[in-house]
Amino acid sequence: MDAFSPYAPEIFEQLMPYWIRDSLAGVPAFLWVYVGLGGLWSLALLPRADWGRRIEVSAVAFAVGPALLTAWMLILGMIGASNEIALLTASNVLIGTVVLALIALGIVWRKR
Image 1 (cartoon, helix red, strand yellow):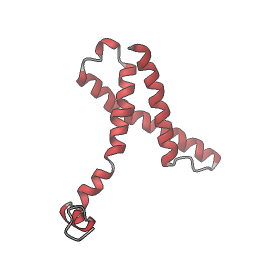
Image 2: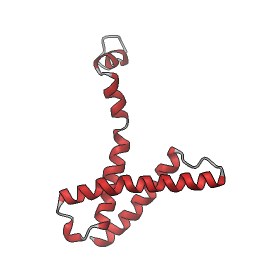
Image 3: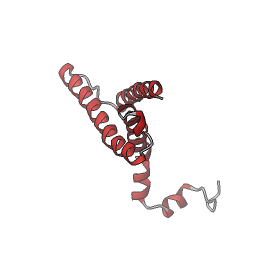
């Protein structure tokens, strides 16, 4: 790639401030917690008649997603501390949230 290419990393770093680049790095994780985990669990917890109320579903998703993530991380931290093993890793957190989302998906599938 030549220096004048619009895809050169140096130009990209000059055009985008560091705080935007650092903020965008966390967007997939936030989307997973709020939309993936929270969205599925909000549909699993709410009655089928309330699924059309998008604001209610969003509010429950924004409450339940981070709460489940926090609870799972607490469980990993407490079990790891009692056994003196580092269980609170990114891979264990991701695996746990995927399992929680699959459980919610099964509940939502039965409710449809």
